[in-house]
Amino acid sequence: MSDAVLEKDMAAYWDRAGKVWVEQQALLDRVYQPIAEAVVERAGLANGEQVMDIGCGAGATTFAAAWRTGPSGRAVGVDISNALLEEARRRAGQDGIEGVAFLHADAQTHAFEPTYDALVSRFGVMFFPDPVAAFANLRRAAKPGRGLTFASWRGLEDNAISQVPLTAAAPFLPAAATVFEKDAPGRFGLADPDRTRRILQEAGWRDVAIEPLDDPTPVTFDELMTMSLRVGPLNPALAKADEALRDRVREAVAQALAPYVENGFARMNSACWLVTAKA
Ligand SMILES: C[S@@+](CC[C@H](N)C(=O)[O-])C[C@H]1O[C@@H](n2cnc3c(N)ncnc32)[C@H](O)[C@@H]1O
Image (cartoon, rainbow, N blue to C red; front, side, top):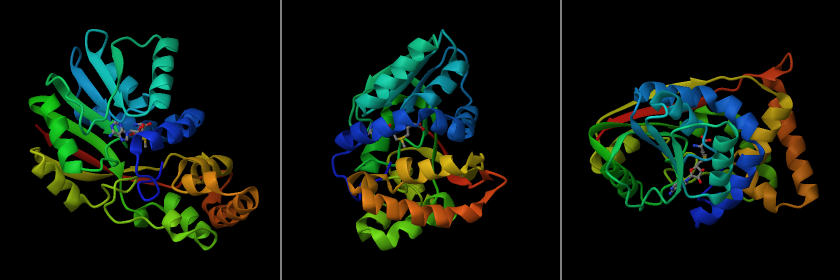
């Protein structure tokens, strides 16, 4: 899901990257389910409430929210990627989930109804080109005093699951593919908690609280490789690389990740922030 470093047009980027997320949905849902649960749990959603899931992707967090808001409430997944929204709608239909709706919109600029009891997100709020404008726009969607709760990634230094593959691949790829510009929109766009606090306060949110959230869900070696090469920050560069280069990178990443696997499973922590604020 990286990154603004390589990609200026986010909607076009997410329509392409979204296809990878759709393809890997079962794996991503399993690995990141504890993060969705932590977000909706902390949001304190109640039956009958209206909640927005920002950057909802294929809808895992929207569905987790809908379990709490119930058929009389409404969980609205908002996303800029048609590919992911199509998958979210398909899953809602297939599983007969009531009280959900999906909206194709740019969360930074869309004029939302100011009717939301809660705004939640798992990894959907780090990509805004103008984060202050985006969070101010989202604040206007929340009823006064109601909450924003989201999970975002901590930095590379805390996330061996990203750093190890990037370091292993670095000798084979252009620097732009493996070096992340600090604070730029993208996976690590809200890694600095002081900056996140400033952004939210400037956007008019108050009572901002930021705490670490860790998710050490175990994955197999093959799943770890898929997450590193297909879903993780190496994907855009590898998608453009030829077969020989892809093989060299795959080999280097496999070697670097092997020591993290014990009895067939790796427990590489997903190191996140859990952020809350009030409108
Ligand atoms: C890393 S994915 C996370 C998806 C989902 N929340 C999950 O955890 O499975 C980031 C999502 O944010 C969406 N996104 C990025 N910028 C957006 C924007 N400006 N407005 C709405 N959605 C956006 C992308 O299309 C993508 O679905």
